[in-house]
Image (tube, rainbow over all chains, first blue to last red; front, side, top):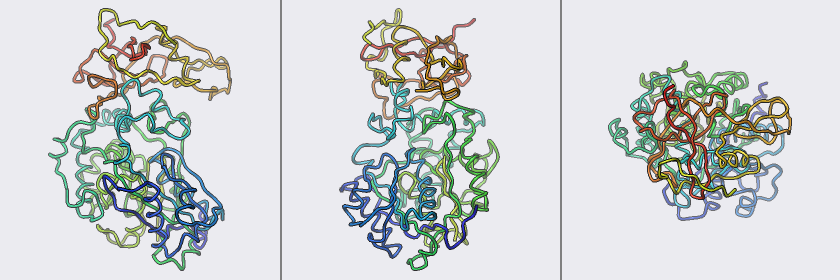
Length: 386
Length: 148
């Protein structure tokens, strides 16, 4: 059911810190700076905030938000599961929260020193989902499957085996994203494009699929969004990015990243399910949007999600990308900011801010005539529009 | 469980620093059985369905009657990778991490040992064995199946 335009939720503010390998300050400060920047971008102040949301593995919470920014009263707060897969899920909750009136101005953030403080991508028994519900530590650790790269590669290998995906196919995705980042001044890899040869020569992280340049880089930084209803957004500073639809799914017997135990591993059943519901809710399909911001922790994710969200048929994603359909001048440009691989890995949140910039027309690599943007993080998808 | 560590016959343990299993209330029966040299799955006493990883309650029939069934130990490699960098904690050499589907239809994250990476294949037939962890626990791993 589509919500009346006036009552529809919109992203009215975006904010961030710089992205780095060592922020030199606390994660709570990164959170506060990013939220403040997003509020300023919206023309709002901490006194306007009455709802907040982040996702698991973030070391800041609503208490930190209120204590540091002087927020007076929170009416609704939550923390969603599933690590980075939750980045686009935050839009589902924020949309429903402001459209239903649970709260009027909701801030969403991600702020981590995951490079300087704890190396998120290395073996670490402390990196577990808050409910400890997934089994990626318990059943994987004694076997040397101890990092996101290993869990992910194990999940993607059957797909690549079935459809004859080569390391060069994956490399073309990395080259594309790094090319976009090279001309984005806020990207960590600004001015540093790579060639397919660089990709092939980079060291193995997880053989025989993930070279170093198939992986995003752990980053320090904070990103925040402000979400309010469109009628409230009339007096905000920047053009609101309406959330036309936002959906997520979590299916029976599935897990977070160690999603090995159910069904056909060569397809992303959850993306297909989300696509159906999202298309109904937004009135437009992901493949009909103008820009695709797809979660790229590792290159194979782009292939499976490109198919799962319906941009091309089964097994066609490597050719779809090789044929240029996701280039900046292609049918649906992929992450013009350089994505998580090229701009920074703030767990997907910086791909949402880029989606908003594309709609406003203020992006570094601005795509022409953007009216709608698709954002995806595996289990979740959202379509933003003017 | 403090079962006496049993070295694989004739072999020295290639990974004496391999991490011990993480024992949770629901998962411990699997590891205890492995320590006794048995490769098992949780079996629902209500409907007979097998589960791995173990569950608190059977998701199909909602029975709390948890039993155990010994598995054939024969399976097929569904997926495999080799963690190279950073080195897997507790391993002297990069292990082959595999997802093995056993004849009973369940999948297990495990290691395939005794095969160089360039001979690993999805679809390879494997059979269960046991490796010893740093604390002397035994855990199921797989080896290429002997020719029938």
